[in-house]
Length: 127
Image (tube, rainbow, N blue to C red; front, side, top):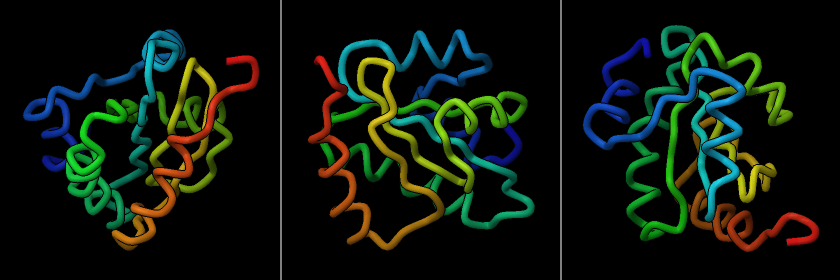
């Protein structure tokens, strides 16, 4: 990772770092909902560090409704393409390996409180 606030997500909170398509697939197809943080460049986009600070708060607020991981910088382009995400930073939510939805850029707290429950209520077809 490239910034202390992003690094702390793995060092302090234990979020796994996803380095490859294999890592992403294995992580997101597990049971439950998974939030993958695609950071973007924290030097060029100051919103990245804001999302890095908000993410642990969101996880705590939603009381374990989802787990979290961070996409490694060198894997970001492939992860964005796989998720159909074009803007970063982005929180991408998966269930059973399928993208449920994403929240690009930093948002107001109320936006997160509105959008995340909508995403969590979604289920992949056939599930």
